[in-house]
Structures are given as C-alpha cells and as structure tokens.
Length: 129
Image (cartoon, rainbow, N blue to C red; front, side):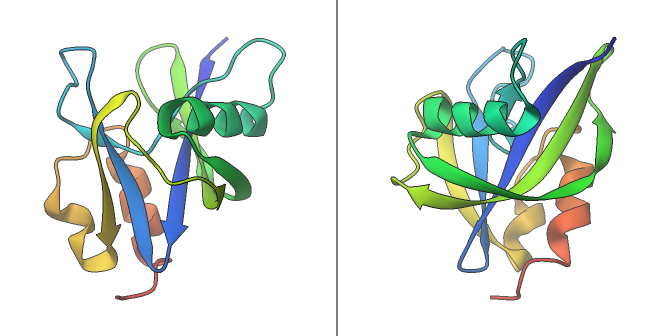
C-alpha cells in the first residue's frame, strides 16, 4: 500500500507560498508546497493542518483538492489541497526559506520534480497580480 504525503497550496492575495527544502541532502535547496506524511489514524486533511502548524507555525483551513494522486517516489503518492491561512504568519521552522510567488513568478524557482505538475495545475487558478 502506498504511503500518502500531503501538500498545502496556500494562496493569499493572489500569491502562493513556496517552501525551500533544508533536507535531506538530495533535495535540499529545491522548492515545494509545505506538507508531509500522513500518520496512522490521521485523515489527509488532519495531517495537512498538523504539518502546516509544525513546519510553518500557522493555522490553515483546507479547501478544494488539487487533482488526484500525484506520483512522488516509489511507495509514495502526493495529494494537494488549496488552503488559506486562518492564524499566524508563516515562518520556515523546517525549511531554508519561504517565498510568496505571484502567478508570473511561479516558474522562477527550481521546484522539486514531484511538485512541478501541481504548480502547472494551479497556475491558471491563481489571479494575475
């Protein structure tokens, strides 16, 4: 059975939050949507809320799902949801950096390969800034 990793596509004022990986070394420096693995007994949405609290120090509300299951690595699938901030200001507790990207800036950073199809899928859903 595949393990599930969840990702939050956090949109605020027409910009999307991207997080730069700190580890492991093979992906450090690459950009992703914040999120992480779903723990046993946890729903995807609960995991997404927990991961955003742990990684960013924020509360989110989970919105519409983006696509289906996105391939990640052998044995893993990535699931993404639109989300909005409900409390706190994002800080990179587990990442090197965070960036808010407008629609015209989305492809100006080196996204991790697993996240790139999600970027392409949400690009046209973000208002032009």
